[in-house]
Image (cartoon, rainbow, N blue to C red; front, side, top):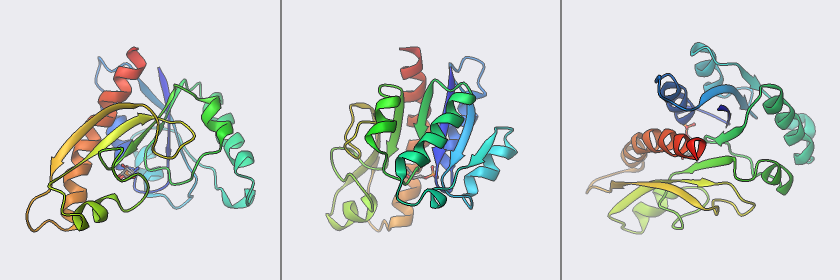
Length: 188
Ligand code: GRF
């Protein structure tokens, strides 16, 4: 199945999906990467891996988020995508795009949802004195970070951890979990 990946930045989860798709038994291929930020480092990483990568900047569309999404949606469909993976895509979606891909769009979030939706998940977990963090892959619905959970992975919070250390530990789990959940979804 062809998958489009939406990014806004570094693109390490996108890279993990591209790598996973190289396995002969992987049921998905990454057909397109789209970033809403032209300067996203992930665009070059995708191209280096031989994947078509487009910047579709949100700025020219101003407040018309739906018009921006229609441009992205057209690119996804033109590339034959059947699924969409949000991999650090930092723009909140309108109900229009969510509906258009209902049941076929997934997101990765760096916390054990329903704990810590939104931003600064690791900072909040550290401030709360949690002993465990993790990540969640879920279907995208209109509530931010709220859709049905497809999978979670845990990572310990160790004494002396700062945000960088915890981010790295959770990110390693994200890279494994995202590909696994996407494969499971595609296989039905
Ligand atoms: C990841 O932590 C992901 O869970 C969150 O945004 C970050 C994106 O990182 N949604 P990357 O661009 O995949 O490296």
